Length: 200
Image: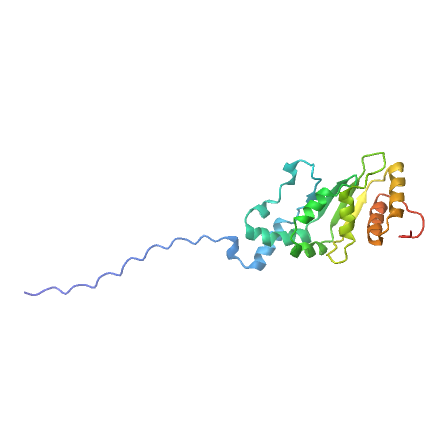
């Protein structure tokens, strides 16, 4: 009996490869940075008082995406985006809370930012109470051992009674670093201190 030779078995069918889903993390880090910069191009960071409406304090959507995106985006926000802080009656509590949330390793990024502004506003016609928040702010700004970003002060002209009280407080301030920082605020509010700058 003759048997017909068997044909070779067909090769096994390869499983159909599913298309690979790429994410932004598959891109080179340099390209991700450029994408983040484009997204942040028109972003302005607003620092509001602690008592402000919490719905207005919502972080940028990129920061809420993932931990890795947050870690990659925050240095760009701190160093590139315009930052505006609203301070009413020298209450720096909102600004202090915002800065305290920045990791110490990233504070230097703020020093690269040339678009930092503190908007000063006085609502009272009576002498301003120099609260703990202002004292903490002046102490932090006078600290030579920490990075000092180039915050620029802007503000409307203070009422005459408030201006006179600020002059008196500034002249009596014993520490030079704190006094010079307060002088920068008063200059922004067009409060003139007679005599040499920083003199007792």
